[in-house]
Structure formats: C-alpha cells, structure tokens
Image (cartoon, rainbow, N blue to C red; front, side):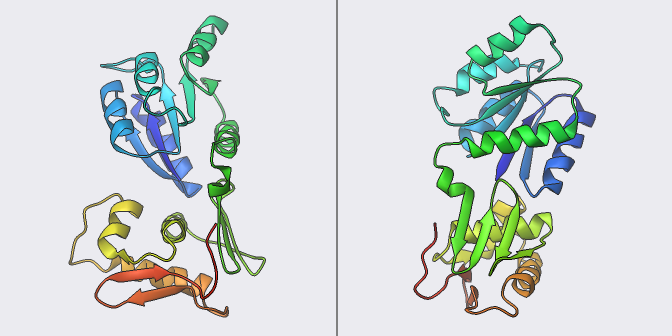
Length: 228
C-alpha cells in the first residue's frame, strides 16, 4: 500500500517515512501543499497523512481541493492545533481522522491500520493465490498457514506481483512501482529481489507461483487458482 506524507517539518517527515517503510508501506513525501495536490492527482494512494500548517497551500485548502476527485482516499490530519474547533473544521472539510501533535508513533500506526480496514473495496486488503495469502493492512504473509517474514522491499514486490497475478510484469514496471525509480538497464536489483522472495515463498511449496517469462520479466500464477 502507498501512503503520502504531507509534512513540511523535514525531521518529522523523515521519522514518519522511515517508520511506515519499516511496516512495509511504500511512502512518498510532499513538503508543501502544492506538491501534495499534484501528487494526489497523478498517483493512486491508499492513505494520506496531512499536516495543516503547510507552505504554498495550507492543509485545509489541499483537503477541500482533492475531495471531489478522491472521494474514497482516507485522510488523517496531523495538527499542532489543540482547539476542538480546529479538529471539527478538519473533519467537516473531508478528513477521516485527526491526530494532535505531539503523538506516539504506535498510536499513529494503529490509526493508519484502522483507516485502511474501513476503506471501500475491503476485499482488496487481503490478496490470495493458491495457499499464499498477503494481508495488506496487517502486513502479514502466510503460505500454507505458515507465516513468512519479508523485508519491506520483499513485501512490496510480492504485493505488486499479487495485485497483478496472471499478468506478465516487466522489470521496468517492477522497479518503477516498488522502488519508485526509473529503470536502469545496468542493474539486476529486480532479479536479486525476485530470488529473495522465491526462496521464502516458493521453496518447499507446491505449486511454484513465481515464474520467469523469458524476454519479458515475471508472472505470478498458479494452475486452476484464482486471485481475490
């Protein structure tokens, strides 16, 4: 799942980005309201964390401008304003939740999971193929009922493969989505991480799910199995 952190306080933005990335979320950071509005219009996010006191465009302006285009996007407002009236205004402007600074990261993390569980299309929060299951909210992967521990990038890679199960995925598509970078033909990072995930997800299990498509890239599929 991809989260947009809109925060002009660089140390706080870095703290949030690192914490969320450690929980296997893909994270983008916008330091001002104009960039946030542009990113939300260009990219599909699963959640936005939005500061109210932003340069260029304040948080409430951003929120009001994106709501008509992104009605189902969960938005959690992060604010140093402690007045009840300010929180009510944020909620009335389209926020789904408010968290007053300073806050504990564990509370923010729990609220993030709660918002993601309440999203429309809840079935998409759990992806399955054969006996492999990935919970996008709880960040848990199991195969045959056995839990599999993945790093943040491994989780992001497997999630992308599952979301595109039955479809041939190029290395370019993978590196742009999982690493958020332009593809460099001189790197084998995708192949390296595919091997890491294969060892954890496919070794010792049948059927094999991750397949190499020569000249193209990779495909996640299982005979006679459907993806939820």
